[in-house]
Length: 259
Length: 241
View 1 (spheres, each protein chain N blue to C red):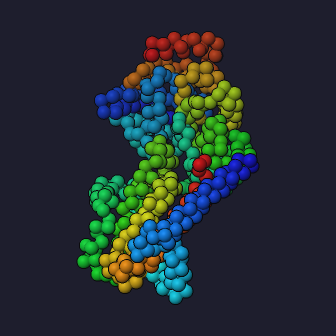
View 2 (cartoon, helix red, strand yellow):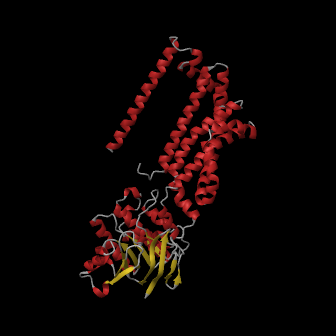
């Protein structure tokens, strides 16, 4: 009980410290621009950004851009997650497949994923499918490797014991390997969500007429720093929120873990 | 009546010869202990019996059936390492072994029965990290017994079931285990390095020679009694260390 109170107190303390630092930072920024130390054309200022944010929200423009980007991110993210988990498990289940295909996945993982975007544009065009495919390519290798590595945490002795009890490979994967790799899977999801957002934005830079990436790119070309920063902040904020949600989901699902 | 015959079993790992023409038989309903120096191949023979390892040569006959190199599923096995699934509580860990058995009717009542016998009922919803070493062992043991009951496995192999336990916990578990196994008339193959533990619980004790394992001597405790036995076994083991 007292431990819980201390934990809550610590959390409140951390939050207060963060809020104080945020207020100080924003005030310093606002003051620097108003005093002429920073050029408003390049830096904008918090009050203008907030004002622009409310305007874009009222006009529906921001929601429109956001919906498009999040649609690309989420569709690609979920396809990448499920395909990655499936491949990771399949590779564990059929080791020969792992020997053949895993090096390619590792190669794809090591490749700077944004560099694939222009190539992908040449292959599949510039519509929604191109952006979703880009996100899948960013998410899939990390999820495959994380799941495959996660299944390795299963003790060999235990697998042997289950084999002696006539468990099939499929049953071992389903009942033991998949649950034991949940930690790795969630870590993969957190890491890959960031990648998914980055690549969706980059894909929108390349070819789009809407989306947060487009908003940022267009604002940069027209020297509208305020609008540009609204785009940057809103997508960053949503990413942080989604990653926080994933952490909460992980805590809920992996409640059996002592940590 | 002989239930299990091990005939001329040999096993090597690369160039390391672990078992060499090993022969022994286990009688139905007896408590048969294997004692030997570290690394002499005690666990290897259990793994071969469970079908996890395939012997290089020799035969294993279980109730007239040749099970050499096969996973027969007719031997219950509790390995030395207690591994429970951390995401399952005690009850669900025990349920795991029933989930792949086609003839596993009324498994919940069977699980409860063994939880009661092994004093696990109060820990039904506990996760492994919430259990002490003794209760992890009890859960592991209950899992082996439930599996053996469902599959009708008459022989149960226990590899160092009391290792890493303090004296009191070990004593309690040993008493409970002996009671259950004797009541149920199970045939037990028990691997240990603790001689007094083997003497207190066994009907027969086999001493393995150092690697590659062969039989050094078999002591029948029902014929010769337990007096002075520890000394005799120690004397036999001394040459092998």
